[in-house]
Image (cartoon, rainbow, N blue to C red; front, side):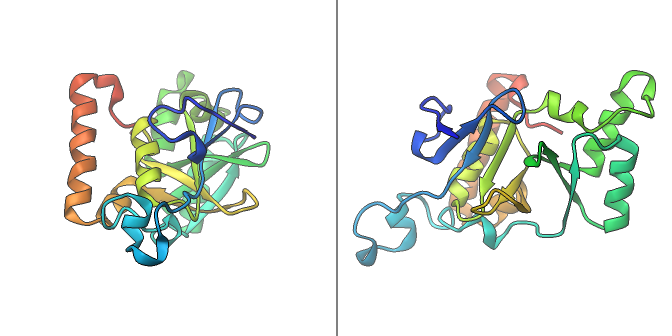
Amino acid sequence: MSTDGDCRELNAKLCLVDVAAVGHPMVTIVPRQPSGIYLESTRDEAYGVLQGEDRPVKDIMIREVATIDASTRLKEAIQIIQDHRCSILIICLDNEPVLAVTEYEVALIMMESDNHSPVATVHEIVKKREAVRCHEDAILADAVRAMLDHRARHIPVVDAQGNAVGALSLMNALGAMTPQAADRWLAKMWQMSSKDPSQMLNR
């Protein structure tokens, strides 16, 4: 992996980009190093964020997920969600977790596929989305910023070895913050969508 110095608003040190797996940049949000004198500051002050934004992703990620390969047929993907009784599917490409999707998103892509093709695969979703994921020890401020920048409602969460360990929901992340912090992100979301409808979050 290499560090991308132009990862939208993200600090380059927090944003790793690998183009090998998906053919276009796959962004991984990594843990931030605290600034200032850590022992003499609160955690949020040490990270330079609002209270609640300093929480690690692993504290609120969705752990009940199913992992599938991008070659899986769309109908099979929906069945896997139902069989596992989970709300999120992690899509892997060349064994790399690249996207997190819901049953609704899979069904929608299936309806939009050519003639509702029974052989269409979840790779149809990979081709249409920007691949974004985050490390389980990344803080919410960085994960939410990436989700808004890349218009993602859910992203895979990986461990130090790059294995999928869960998924992060944007709404869960905002709900875990203080009202002040959540309002700031909601205002940014509204500003993005009002200036450019194409900046609306993916379904």
